[in-house]
Length: 381
Image (cartoon, rainbow, N blue to C red; front, top):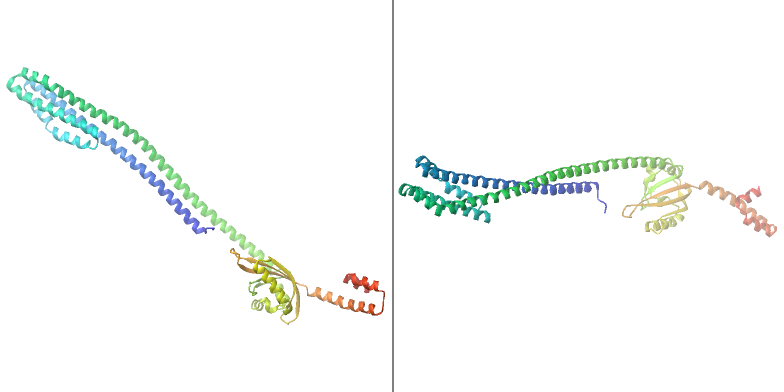
């Protein structure tokens, strides 16, 4: 089944829009993935910043602790207290940032555990410093605090190493996703514009082709109309029921009717009764598909009722579904030929009859019967 022009255009538009939508979905998905990679990288950088901040605070606390022990200056004690003041909130915030990752959570829990123990021990050392003196505190630090401090440092380095590794991975993914997004956007743009251009080109070419077909059809119709109207023989377009649809000037002149008068009649109405059955039989064969066309000699009755002998050739034009559309009839006036033949045949028959009755040689009579009419007529002259 052949689709109409409008349906082809609609189908092309729908296909183009669906393809653009598909490419847009792919591009959107790639952008979402890129955004997720950026978010993951930003989250990792945030954890690194918080870990470094916490490490700095612990380092400052260790430094103020050592200075306080050495100088017994309360400025260092105040610095120590200030540095660990937000320790609990900082460690809780860090834990909330890594709560979704099991390994990172273990590392932060280890940092919290040993740094808390270390800070608690430092507070105890400071307290003992006032009571027991420097040597007792140093002995206590060596036996307990050193391992806590090293475990805290190890936990911090583990967190840093993990986050740096993740950051490299996320940055690599971000770079890859960025290239994919750019490539996808370029492809979507090129393909979308290409499809739109192709669609408009198809529409333009189709419209131009239709215009050319219309021009050719108009030219063909004009040529056919001139050939039809100014033909030297009678021509007509006849409906399957026998009504005259279109007639040319020669046919009107041949039958003595005006065009308006003839179009009101059917060929059956002006066909000689003795020729009508044969004509209708041929028409029936063409309509049934038994034959494609036919030719016959027949008689029409003109407007004055006189006989007009014609040589009729008829062919059928069908619709796309093979149903009959109209007949094309070509009609040649042979009345004069018929009259000449009749004028020659009548005297010849009389002469032959006379020869026979006068008892001429039978061989001559037989020979005369075999000769063409035109030759006999010439001989008789």
